[in-house]
Length: 325
Image 1 (cartoon, one colour):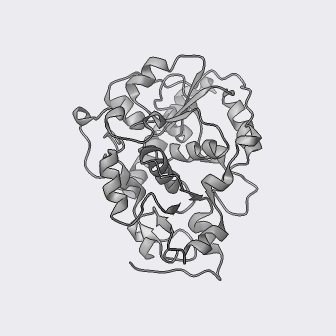
Image 2 (cartoon, one colour):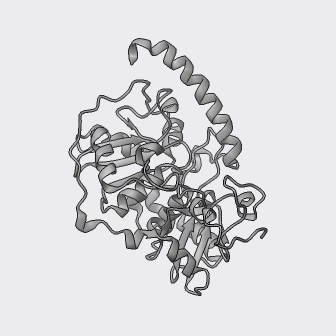
């Protein structure tokens, strides 16, 4: 692969530039968060601060044999600079190609095979990052948690924060040796972490359940759609996933807001700890991010991510949808 490194890197730069333009327009982050305003993770009042790791701490431990850093970005971005030693993973690696709907989670067996191919073994601490406020990384976190693997953290601020601190990056691929990974079947807990289509149907009329739309406002109202149908699941509350992170353009750190700030955002819309929360988006990527925020940072006990999300719901023509606010 590296015999053609010059050609690959040239093509990579073009691809990354294009991807960055599209991502910046689509996700529309607000103003940058100055590096000097960084609040340490353990001072933000989180229910489980250990679910995150700071760039400084990762720099200290990343070379340990039992630590595997996962760069959850497209290969094109990975080869323009990643955290040294990080292995590259992206969405297709954790999706089930045999599922009826696009973007559905991989099975435990498929995940085991993928993790082993990336050099990951049981007992390893898995630290996942991306360049979009852990937007993509949270999806892998959610799958691992659902399948009973707890030694996983997200890098606060991702590689954007890492680069803001002028930490070293690498252009070369990691030297990967096959790992040995197997989920403990007794620890797999779909019921806790996963909302089914039937769960969502019942939630529409349940006063004790909140269906939470984490997509953009345009998707929620039906102005924009990526499927044949427009709008949102009836009774769903809208809070876009990125409300949970400090602003940040393509070159600004995107760290999580404090627990106090987060509680204010979610409680204002009735997304409270005493209820069951079912987040959804287009294909359960953004909603995985919100699931992380609610369970790990705010300590909510009853949050079930709807993996089928809008792709599945909208495909069932008999199911109702609402448009507008």
